[in-house]
Image 1: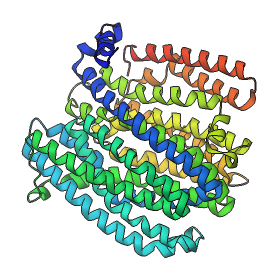
Image 2: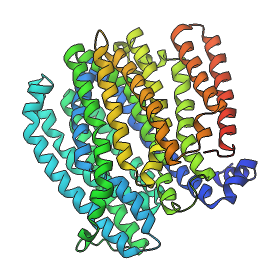
Image 3: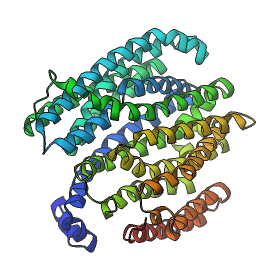
Amino acid sequence: MNNGNLLNLFFNTTLGKRIHSSPKAFEFFKNSLWSVGGAILSKGLIFISWIIVANLLGSDGYGQFGIVRSTVLMFTSFAGFSLGITASKHVAEFLDVDKEKAGRILGLTLRFGFVMGILVGIIFFLLSPWLAVKTLNAPEFVDELRIGSLILLFSALNGAQIGAIQGFGAFKQIALINIIQAIISFPMFLCGAYYFGVNGTIWAFSVSYIVICLLSNKVLKIEAIKNGIEIDYGNSWKEKSLLFSYSLPAFLSGLMVTPIKWYTDSLLVSRGGFEQMGLFTAALTFNNIILVGAGMLSAPFIAILARNKNQKRNSQFNRFNILAPWAIGVFITGPFIVFPELGGKIFGESFLGDKFKYTFIFVLVFTIIIMFKQGLGRVMAIYNLQWWSLGSNLLWGACLIVSFLLFPIQDAYYLSISYVISYIINILLVLPIYYKKKIIPQNTIESIEAFGIWFLVSVMIFTGVFFENVFVKVFICILSLVIVFFLFRRLLFKKNKF
């Protein structure tokens, strides 16, 4: 049976008819289908490469790679300046109503991304000796950090390019870009790790950024011509207000996240050693893959919400925006929470044992919480509430650092628990703001169904920690996920209440 017949069968179902009858839902379904397909192929291949690299480098070597990668990625938040979401939101918003403005916004974000990439890349290259010696206590990593300056240049420019392509709604092209990048990067990661160790892996990591930047640049030019948009660099500064009213608060909000993560990672290395960093990095690999994959799936949300921002906030699509990433997080991580030993077996002998098992469980738990927050964050971005997002991230960062330092030792297990604690406190304290602004229906979060979902997640955590019998664990996992499915379904079709 070919794909066309499968789609016809789906659209003949009750759910399929609902989707087909709603323009927004159908657009989201079509775009997400490409995003999901691209994510499965590209991120699946990258995920396999990380597993092989972890086995080749061992927990100590993988920890060294992890802290270098974490340090480089911290600076990408500076270089990116949140230009991706700026381009995505505003290109989608003005694509059909003001093509000249859309062209100026494209010119502004691309030019500014290039300048920021060069500037931050040079600064990072010059700071590499200080970072290696003073913050990582690893002077032997100066060359590896300097290699990372290439990533900063190309990641800044690519962030703006991918955001613009999303604004055009070209999710099929984004999927193809990611698949091609993954195919090219896969042998580079393996050869780099096998022949040159940590240094080779970082070189492969840098080249992968160059590849995706070149691919997205080509696609962006094609999409601009197709949509009748001329990328206007000469008059782009007329749109400079976007940098200060939208990009700046979004940038500062993101700025709170990556440096704080890097700081806690550096604490983990200095007090627990590279082995602990290796355990945490391996567990975090699942988190990264899930978040990136889910980001691809839900990427159409920004463009669709931006084009329909003047409609009522309480539409069912807005509710779906909140529930979809949360549901994805529960269904993907649930089986691994119940069977955490699978993580250790995947990454090799260096990662077997209770320490990694418990770290893995709690990393998956805060992955679900992050997914829960994703829809809320998109709504704040669409309605220009980025300053509130900044305050939320400040609160989260303070809770993460304080909770980690209060534990008797700073190892991978306690860092994962600190993440869970900080996200829970953050959500409990900022939810009243969402309600006051009437951004989300209150009965989406405070409902019997929502409490039931969190209760079943807790049941799966308890099962993963304390149960050993495989048949009991399988039964609890399947039963919990089936009940969760029906709870999410009830939540989706509830009448909104603010």
